[in-house]
Picture 1 (cartoon, rainbow, N blue to C red):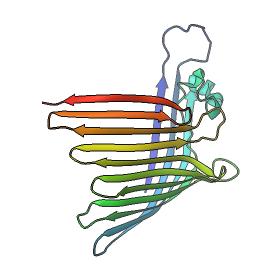
Picture 2 (tube, rainbow, N blue to C red):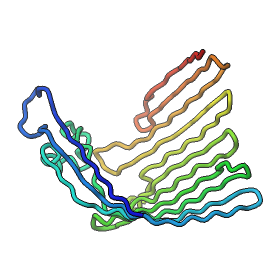
Picture 3 (cartoon, rainbow, N blue to C red):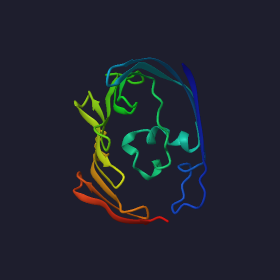
Picture 4 (cartoon, rainbow, N blue to C red):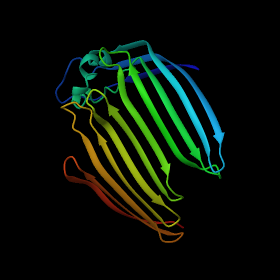
Length: 240
């Protein structure tokens, strides 16, 4: 299949600056198009107690034309550098490069006798052709496992070959039934840029449905990188 993608945005600044500037915050327009080519093959086979579906494919993205003026043109070189992303001048520059890349993916699904999904598993490998050096991007692994009718485990991780380490790893386990719901999750992300801190935090939540009218909830978040509590709350809900 083939798809052409079009994107455009316009930024208009108003008000008065505390410290007047000339071109830093001038109005600007950005527009681009890029192309996506996709191909995949899917097979399904039924067994005595489950059904297995296998999906293998590839997706190729290539850039097209782009145009920018004003703010987007003035700050393009500076703000497109990830090391400046947190600076005030770049807070409105939300343009991400579209890179020429190829993604190869493999995914599979397992369904029980009632047709409910039990396992979803995906492996995806990107190859970046827009830069010199190692073209292999992060290897993505995604798993969604319905362990039982009420218990679910989810993982999404990215492995960086250059750093020989995980650049992102998200894990979540949850339990839910008609009365209780409980979840615990952990998020780790490392962009391997000294000016951007690692993300490493833990979240948890619990909910209790007392009856058709009353329910209670609690949440607790903790930043493991900074060793501080990020948030905590207790909730109460009444429904007629």
